[in-house]
Image 1: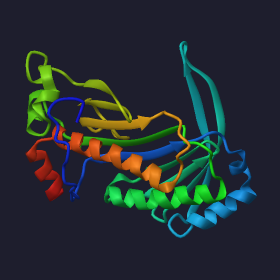
Image 2 (image 1 turned 180 degrees about the vertical axis):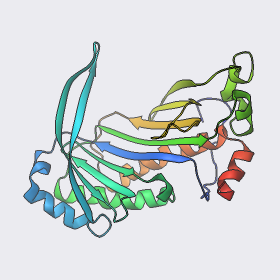
Image 3 (image 1 turned 45 degrees about the vertical axis):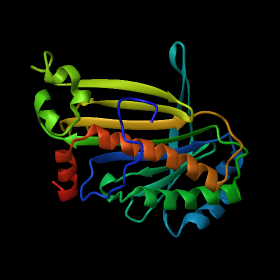
Image 4 (image 1 turned 45 degrees about the horizontal axis):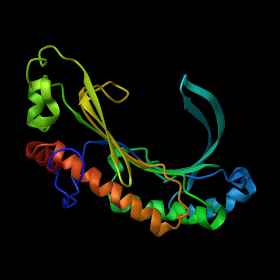
Length: 258
């Protein structure tokens, strides 16, 4: 692996009783397909995914363009959400993107389920609204290990190489500390954020591990097989990195469901 420290290149996947996952999203962006906003035509897409995603809700999505002067050219456009009956998973479709989101992280099972659900949503889009290119593809996992611990105490659960000064001279009295690392790779960019920070609606204290892997190279390869192959590469690296970030004590806790 050509980034970071000595991270294993192959780690066997494991399903935990209680993983620290808080949010997960896979997204593909493409040049605008305006026919998606025709509700009469969108009904055929709904029929194609209804077996897994029976719930439907229209939304308005805010799109912000980031320029040298900061956020600008904000626009609001229609979005269409198709959700599972328990609202745990949802496909969000706009004229420029398709996203698969885990809305209830506790219901996430494993990466294979993500791929199965994404294949359904993407193959239906290819059938009814085929884009001519993929302009961006990304996969993001946000983990938050909950705990009200002093900086040095996080060494029980987090690789000490990540904690740095928190377990040394700067550890005393620190309430929040977040770092961002950006790795340029041959197949995209991996942005890794980590640190002590409250999260969730109740501001629960804990340690953040946020892995965002994306590629913005435009490609005409839009087939289900090609997008899944890219997701596979992203996920393998993200999972290996996650396992490097946490200690065996943390893994045992995820296994037990602590």
